[in-house]
Each structure stands twice: as structure tokens, then as C-alpha cells.
Amino acid sequence: MRYAVNLPVIGEYADPHVLVSLAQDAERAGWDAVFVWDSLVFDLRTRPPVTDPWIVLAAIAATTERVRIGTMVAQLARRRPWKVAREVATLDHLSAGRMILGVGLGFSGEAEFEQFGEDGDARVRAGKLDECLTIVRGLCTGEPFAFTGEHYTVRETTFLPRPVQRQVPVWVAGYWPNKRPFRRAARWDGAAPAEMDIRDDGFSILPSSPESARKMIDYISGHRTSDGPYDVIVSRALPREPGELIAAYESAGVTWILRDMLPWETPLDEAFRIVRAGPLGGD
Image (tube, rainbow, N blue to C red; front, top):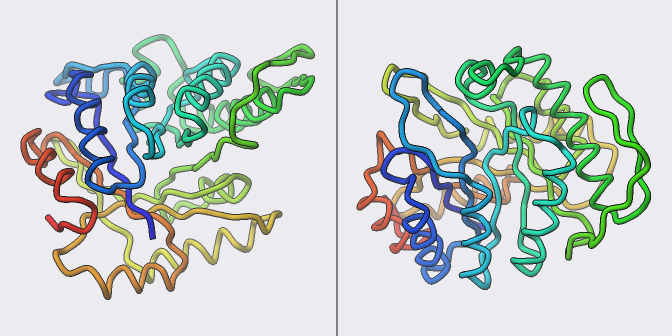
């Protein structure tokens, strides 16, 4: 089992210096990866401060040596995929091959898409996401690549340098038990299921149980066309004595435990305490 921390880029977490410090503390404390959210506005009512995840990841890559880094999750449907390909390859070089691209449809179609004249419809976002992933992976091969789809067109193009890794892993997030995101996840390198309780002041992430994770993994396995390595990421806080719980997740096929820091639930000083305590320090 490996352990990651997921850092928001909003509210009191919007200071890039704070996020870099948390990432450095996470590396020292034994975490295996540090991820950051991707947001432009997040909430049209509260309009919290927001910092750019890609620039923060560059700073984290340059000031750490071991932890994997990445987005959790990048809302690619509002991005130009060729620009994302350049950013992914650059971050992989800057981090010496530690980049992971976590992707999803995003939390709010209204705040993150329609506010800027983009189509917030979930089906449109899903179509763009699928095409975007194909283009990013194709351009990152370093070989001639062309694409014609409903949303994007790329004339034959070669992007160099290619990433350090043979393939930068792509993890796909989705709300289980919705099936479509996990059919998408089956085509890539990992799945990050989430179950959420939406509230007026934000949301809570409901951790998937080992039994729920097993059902999701069985579903993905039935749609995979490759038998290569595959990661499954469960978001949850661990109790102080997590041994039996971790063993149950491992038996189900989970490979990562992700500790999400939700700003309305975890004040910044508490986040530093949790990160410095290490992945098995308990909450």
C-alpha cells in the first residue's frame, strides 16, 4: 500500500508557499505522493482565493526529490490538450519522472466552465475529456501524431522531448456507483472512486469501504483490455490503528490511500499536523 496527500488550492491553502511547505513536510514524513486540486473559481457564492495548480506543481517538483506529484483531479475539458501535453512532459522532466496525471469531469460545471463561456454539460465535458486524454497520450509519445474528433483536431505533430517515464500514468476519478467514469478508467492506468455528501458549505468525501472498492475493481476488470499494472486510489482518513483496514483494502485490490484535506473540515494548522505525523500517524 502507498499513501498520498491531496491538497486544495483554495481558501487559506491558496498560498503557493504553503503548498510547497506541505509537500516538503510530506516527503520528510514518508508520504509517497503529493497531489493538488485543480480549480479556477470553485464556488460562485463564496468565491474563495484560488492558486494555479500547475505552477504550484512546478515549485513542488523543483523542491522535492522522492514523492510522486500530480493533479487530483485536472479538469481537462476546459484545457487545450496540446498545452496539457507540454505541461505534463515538462513536469515529468522537472520531477525526474514523478508525474501522475489525475483527471475527472470536475466538481462544478457552472463555476468552472459556464462562468467562462464553456459548455458545462456533463456529457460534453466527458466527450472532451476522452478526446483530450487521447491527444495528451499521443503527443507525449514523441512520435508523429494526428487526431480528428468532435471537439479537437491536431494535424500531424511531433512533440519533443517526450516525458522521462515511458508513459505518465493517467488516473481517472469518478463518482461510484456511476458506471461510465469507470469504463473510462478501465482504458487508462488507475481509478480514483469518490462518494460525496454535498452540503451548503462544501462537501464531505465518503470513503469507499473495502467491499465497495472490490465491486468497483471487479467492474473495471471486466472492461480492461490490458493486463498491465493498475492502481486503485481510495480517499479516506485512517484510524490510529489501521492495520486490519489496510489489509482489507489490499485484499480488495486497492493500491493507494489518499488523504484529502478539505478546507472547511481541515484548517491549515491541522493539515500541517496530519502531514507531519506521516501516513500512518492517524487523525
